[in-house]
Image (cartoon, rainbow, N blue to C red; front, side, top):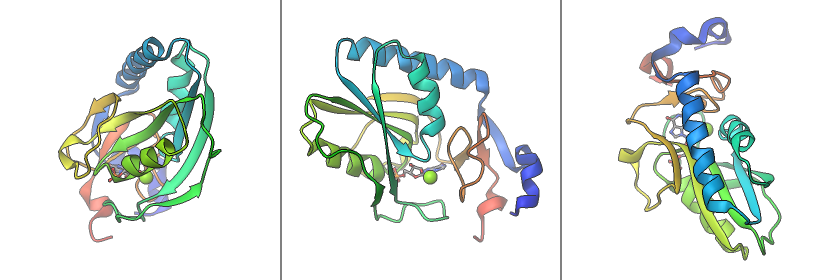
Length: 188
Ligand code: IMP
Ligand code: MG
């Protein structure tokens, strides 16, 4: 894989899982669920960078309730496609969350390691509640006991990219979600 392939990312896809229209429907449904549950609450939406940024941007614009927005950056993955089992906080938010109902936004639940660690961290900061919203859920890969409170869609055990999700920092800007061809990352 080289930057030369950037001219046509579509040909690096095995198949398309969710079109732009599918994604719009997913986002509208999840936003409505969140609006229903957080009415009248002091909501803080916390996105985990970078994967969640496109989903979060679309999601909060479909929400009717007021909310504050924050971002955290953590890393549990290198350039490969499986979890390293290590989590480093690269950018944090305020340590005091008193009075807030926190909604953590992640691109995808895979092993569950990242979300469960970040959730644990936020729960120690006096928030009223901490819930999890993920765009995608790779359910069959879960090794940590964690579930999303709001889930966009369940996906099979394949490496997916687009709509914020990357492989080696590429493909995040695809407006749809696709399964990356194995040959792109095999032997890497
Ligand atoms: P976990 O800690 O194993 O749940 O991994 C979560 C993180 O791994 C996500 O935030 C993603 O950044 C990344 N990840 C897991 N599966 C995929 C995938 O299929 N495509 C792109 N990134 C993924
Ligand atoms: Mg990632």
